[in-house]
Length: 226
Image 1 (cartoon, rainbow, N blue to C red):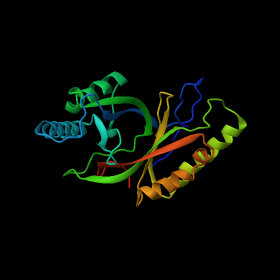
Image 2: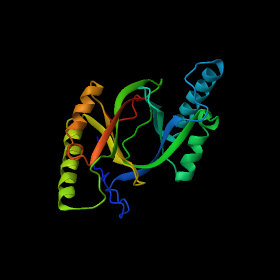
Image 3: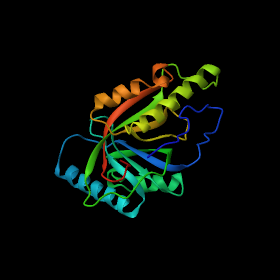
Image 4: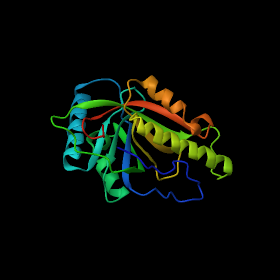
């Protein structure tokens, strides 16, 4: 299972120092590009198939440890998580996706830290539903470290471990670039509403230090722990 995760609330004056057992992966968020269109045509059908074939090739080769679409119609269409030697290598892999190379999508890259909990996808490939929450800076976010923020962080980490023990939270980890996105939670629960309820109870969310942006994420079966 998971989990020891480092804080997604790292001071802007500090370099992120992930906890033991964490590995740096590289996450590509696939967003609408300059040539994006929602209109289906023979060209977009071909491009979609080329994209799917490329996703499968990255999973087969081990370049991507997990990849799959977000299905709720936002401007993020899907996510890759790459096991790469460098950010440059991961970016090159993301940009080689035919849908990115064509301008249909763009790849927004982030370093992401997680325990190495991932397995090879089951075959034949089958997608399973999870719920992904992006942790973002909340309205009351500040970079300063104070006794109050330390107390909130302790509660945040305790909540992570509680949800992991309940087997509701199956993956979590911080982004390493100290931007608006602080980290992610991946839930295996019955509904989007349940995922929202679980995130709403996080002390950092309740305090306004963090906010949550939750999506339905389809991922290859067998990759994430049960």
